[in-house]
Image (cartoon, rainbow, N blue to C red):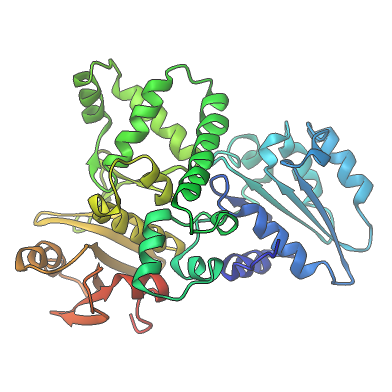
Length: 405
C-alpha cells in the first residue's frame, strides 16, 4: 500500500536526527505511528551511509523478541559499524525491560533510536531515570482536516467537512473508504474495542467492565462540558452504581493513559493559576466518540465541532486550557512560548443571544492577545468584530489562524 508522508511529523522526526536523543512517537492505537516509521524508512533507505534496523512488534516475524536481551541480540546482529545506524522499534512497550536495551544503543556513535508506544506512561519510571531526560516525545494525532482530504482524495467542501466531523481522522479509514457507512463504523468499532481490551482491560486487569463502558459513554455524552469526579460518582449512584470519586479518577486515568481521552484543566485568565477540579474532557478521535453516542451528527454537532477545534489547536503545538473569567468561560486559552491566543468554539452564529454568549467573554479580557470565535456559520470566511476575529470552521481546520495573528 502507498505510504503518504505526513509532512508535519516527517519534518519533526528529521529535525531530531543526529542530536543524541531517543525519539519517541506516542499516541493511541491506529493513529498512524507505524506509518510515520515506515515513511521514515521510505524517505531514507537509499542513503548510502544509512543502516536502518526496523522491529515491528505487531508482526509475527518479531514475536520472539520478548525481553531486552532478545532485543539486544537482534540489534547486534543487524548493527553495522561505520554506518549511520537508525534503530526503529514499533510498539516497544511489548518488550519486557526495553529501557535497559534502549539506553545502551542510543548512546552509540552515529546512532539514532526512534520508538513508538500506545501508552502515555511508556517513558516514565525507570526509562526516564536512566536517560535523565535525553529523549524527545512527539505526540501523533489523528488526521487533520487537510490530511483527511489528502488521504481520501477529496476536495474541500461542506460535504467533506461533514464526513470529517462524522468519522474522525483515523488514517486506517483510507483503506476502508468512506462509501459504506456500515463499514466505517465497523472499523471504528474494532479500533475502539482493541484499545479497551488491550490497553485498558488486560493491562489493568479490570473486573468492573459495566462501569468501564458506562463511564466512557458518559464522557461521550459530556464532551466539552465541565465535569468532576464527585459529580460523576453522584450520577452513578443515582443509576444504582456505587462508585467512588477515587474510582472515577482511576478509570479516567486508564482512558488518558491509552490516549483515548484528554483531560483539560481550567485556567484563571486574570489570576494566572490552574484550578484543580472541574475539568473538561475531549476525545483523541471524535469518530470514536461518535461511535459511543446515540443519534446522528446533527444531534451532537456542537460537541464535535468543539472537540475538532481542540484537537487542531493541539496539533498546532498549543498547550490548551479552559479559560475562566468572573464574567464567564472562554473555551480555550492556547499558549506557546511568548504567545497566547483565546478561542471560542460555536456552531452557527444566527442569533444575537448566541453572539453575546460567544463574543461577550472575549470582550471582557483586557489584554492585546489575539481573540477568535470559530464557527460553522454558512458563507462566513473571516471578519473582525470589536477586535475579535470571527473565523470559518472550514478555513480554520484547513489553514489555521491568519498569518498576521
